[in-house]
Length: 437
Image (cartoon, rainbow, N blue to C red; front, side, top):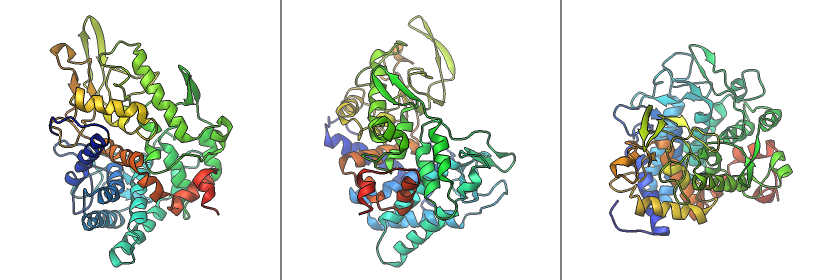
């Protein structure tokens, strides 16, 4: 990005363009797989691949990609996942309609002995359903996309993923079976439960959603009352596809707000936490915040300005309980743009024009920076991550668009499986009630 100062809409347009470039250049065109991280010999991430599928229609609408190219990429991706090996063998691509978190970029086989991931499969399937909603023409290729998308979605055995319990498990491994963790507490699993409820082939019982709701925590941080989740991204990811404005489940009806307003409050709480800065980190302030699950400069302990600081590597950073080591994730703040543009736009301007965080970065913002670490060497940003991650780039593209036009939200209102899932979860009101008329 050049040194020319941009403001407002021009900033958003260029940031969206740069962020989308990751998917344009870090994807295997033969199978549609998107590399998890811009590092040599790194595997693909199925979540990043789902975000790419969701970003292609936006790129077409914004003139960043031709319709033909987006169609070819999307079709190659869906064909790969449909034809890839499903089974209990250790090097399969998936099992029971779910997929391994990380896949080899070339072969598409399981990488790193990772888990069969329920949430990452949900993010992939959200992209699959986006492709089906967008490519709606009456021709062979677009019909094939819709057919493959439906087949992929209906293959996922959500009932199996319960492992006999009430709440969905995090995943499964062929070597050891189901992981010992279940999705509990408010987080990105909102999308996961909606998809699992919306299936017409292997839906989970509605009572599973109630069981999940029972694990929520309602908290107050400096006057901001909301359903607690520490990392900022947990208040955003499901909102990339689902327009929660004006629709409520049982829990939110009792609280008198919706999940959109909940994310507004969580965003303001993040900003207030940075203003309070009770741990005394450098850089934190009204226009410098965004604490989320992310990579970092550690693991190491360093004495800075007389204070012994422990810095973490990748961690589920969050507020107000931490962990917090002074590391900020620009993408996570940007993804709150639809919720609170009045505080996010000044932050974007600060990150681009004051801290120069996009300068000479082909994909826009790097994953994270830490103004405290290395700040004694006169660097206003301190430590800056070397990497871009697909799961960071996607929400920037999608949420900037939802702020600018609501395009993805409007598109996904017509996805029957999402609509059915919302209704099975007890949502009503707003656009969801209007659709019944």
